[in-house]
Length: 335
Ligand code: TRP
Image 1 (cartoon, protein in one colour):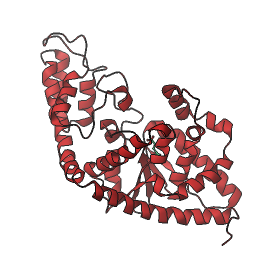
Image 2 (cartoon, helix red, strand yellow):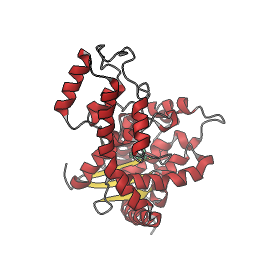
Image 3 (tube, helix red, strand yellow):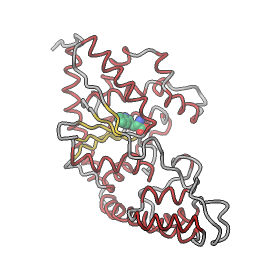
Image 4 (cartoon, protein in one colour):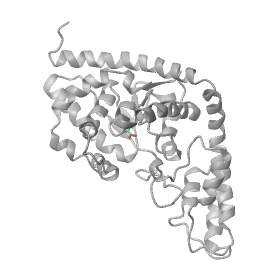
């Protein structure tokens, strides 16, 4: 990893970001902004592929996600934060790439298939939704990104990217760059929601948001799922499927104390309320600096938009370079 590495990643603006996003990719981005050239995209056009009728919700979420980025500590001086719809080069690339993939291939993307099942589109599946992986190929290749930090569910998008890159380069000459996924530590494991049963997600109502106040955080931690058989403090407790310990495992910086707590809990004599107290402390300490920064930026949304607009200009310039090369390679260079 070094300054020659180009990293592109993004989020669909369909709500505020939560702890799952933090461990899944935001944390890694903080590290990457110091080491590589980092582009972070708010994927509003991708969000519209399943929110066409809720464009105002997408619009509001763009600001929320922008605030989430800044409050987590992404620094617009070190990285380029931008809005997808302000980089029209991406959509021209998408159209060219769509000729390099078959309908059959699109239909068999496992992530898209899973999402179609979850979302249960009532009026049929929007064509734009089935092809969004190709738009994502454009996002990645426009910047010649060689690294893409994403959750495990995004692996099929990286495979799709590399297929198109290889096909394009074979047909038209060496223009595009293959990408590698950076999967967060802990591999494919997604952060479980406070229900302890499903991955953390806005739609399941089991998320802890980066913008949650101390009070809200405390209530959510108290509601969390632990060992259902740990009825009395003195009963031995189990760490299996115990969301509170799962979280401590991910977030508690004091590993020694955590090991002690785990042993004590399994022996019996350590009550759930104390374990939850510790988790609240750990998460509150993580979120507090984010809340402070958020409060500052939230006072001046115009400044947040200025940052995103400036980033978008820079992103558009860079994408334009790739687009010119793509056009030339495809014999579309009339000027
Ligand atoms: N599909 C990603 C998600 O749902 C968001 C995204 C859009 C993305 N374009 C991207 C991620 C390009 C990485 C690279 O979270």
